[in-house]
Length: 296
Ligand SMILES: Nc1ncnc2c1ncn2[C@@H]1O[C@H](COP(=O)(O)OP(=O)(O)O)[C@@H](O)[C@H]1O
Ligand SMILES: [Mg+2]
Image (cartoon, rainbow, N blue to C red):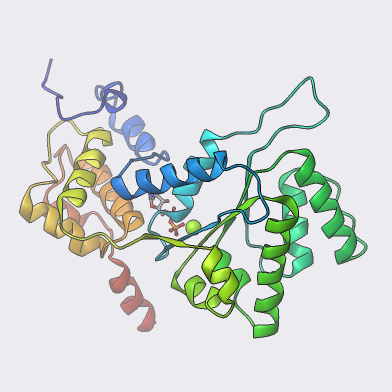
């Protein structure tokens, strides 16, 4: 048997399979832990066990788009799935994640919450929706409301912004829950208009990746999960530097680059990722895509 010591047991399971099934497997979602994600998950765990009180601690998770915010909160949600609570009247749902709806208003956010819980949505008034949301979230004993892409909620006129911020404060105070918002740098600018919110929503950052020990470790983790029969040694300098410059520091781009490269490596029979394969696999770095778009 060949030496596959470069692989994770999960990748090892299918390494002898044909090209087709390995390529399909590559596009599966996967979670790779890294130090900053672990640190934020630990803080989220702490929020979850925080005793209820009038002023609950909150959190913002701030980072560029495509740098792992949604994946991180999904991981947290996945670890805290609702309990069917067969003996009780309601499910027990400690963590609920919603997306910011397009053209967000107070009413549409309440509808989003009710929709996520498959609850009846009173079509009548914002007031009715608000009352229903409070009632339902109390019944399921919510502890943390995660709002993804919160920067979209806080876009728009300053009146709108203030309304959204007031809603967050209201939900937090009324239900004694923590609110976790994910967003880009715009989110930080938006909350800065309300000092009370700014103080109560400390930011945690997912910065762009740089060339350091953590990045090399990340490359090793990716390599272990790509079902290639030869070792690529992605963490060795020239290849690591090339990967970083192509992905421009975003984990989502790195994932796309390595997936495309791995597919190409399988199809071509090379069975490992090289600089040449990164160039030829069809992946375009984000700034290259922007440049192409501007020429059309
Ligand atoms: N921890 C992780 N492990 C593996 N891949 C990840 C991880 N975090 C992000 N990714 C990849 O990056 C992509 C973008 O991540 P996402 O969380 O959607 O970014 P954001 O919400 O910041 O825009 C994901 O689709 C996934 O391919
Ligand atoms: Mg996202």
